[in-house]
Amino acid sequence: MNMWLKSLALILMLLCSSFIYWRTIGIHNRHYLQATSMIITDSQPIMLETPKESGIFFIETTDRMFPPALVTCSVESAARTYPNKTVYFLMKGLTNEISINLNSNYTALFVLASMNNVKILPLSFEELFKNTPLSSWYQKIDPSKQIYWTHHVSDACRAALVWKYGGIYMDTDVLSLRPVPVEDFLVAEHPQSCSSAVLGFRRHHPFLWDCMVDYVTNYNGDIWGQQGPMLYTRMAAKLCKMPDFANVGDAMCQNFSYLQPKRFYPILYPSWKRYYEKWDNTESVFNLSYGLHFWNYMNREHKEVTAGSNTVAEHLFKNNCPVTYYSLVQRNPS
Image (tube, rainbow, N blue to C red; front, side):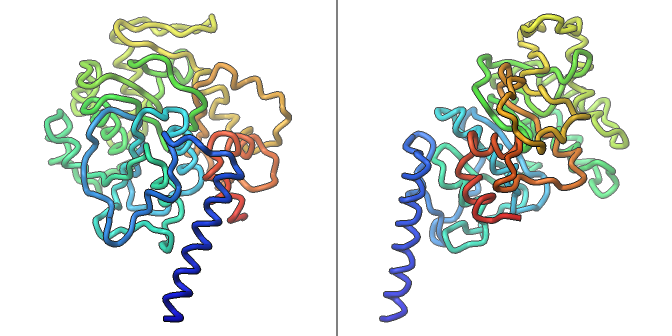
């Protein structure tokens, strides 16, 4: 009986602490967060299902089950920016044996599972590629012989997901600031190069089908980016002249928008460390941006957001993913 009472007291303390915290940071929007009503327990495991509708897609193509704060922030910021859309986080390492609850070690996933427009789902390459041009390629490929397998299979997944279900794909190092106002779009990294870190199309858009056909036809596992930025650049160039973006506005490429670089790349990759420099309250450079690519691939120094650092990244975390900031940064300082 004493053990039962102690357990009950602990649960009540945790729930009270959670309530006080949500009140403190001012999160009242029921459309994207229900911190205590979506706890996943052993008797209520994550369902092994596929997306049911269009939405915002993030993927983890390795078996990693402990996403860092930047990944969690990216998903949370999308959930806040698009409160009426389902935000999917598909993870290759997820199985029906995984249980996410208050007492588990999956803190980051618990944070995301607490948001009622976020769904954490398993990622099955074979299932995803069914009924697409990628299926025959996947059946023949030997991942152990691919230098950039994690990147290339990720490139395949994003095209298949958006083609099958419709919506927006984002890399897990892209923070959302405000909604993209168009449905069908690619994003320029710079005038002559298209990004694959963010893209959005309606379900069954023919451009993405053509991209998947090109993916298989011109697959080269020895070239990083061949199936990613280079694919979308060459496919867009077939349809329209690549704009120079001399003006502030975006461009059109037949039946989809081609967004100018500042929409997601106000800080280009050679300057990626700026995100970890001091915030000076004059960052008007983000005024035209719908989101920010953190260039985590360049972060070989493993820089992280730290509490009290007063960096650009910390400022962005506090404003765009406060639950992540509190749970994974402030409460767990480096």
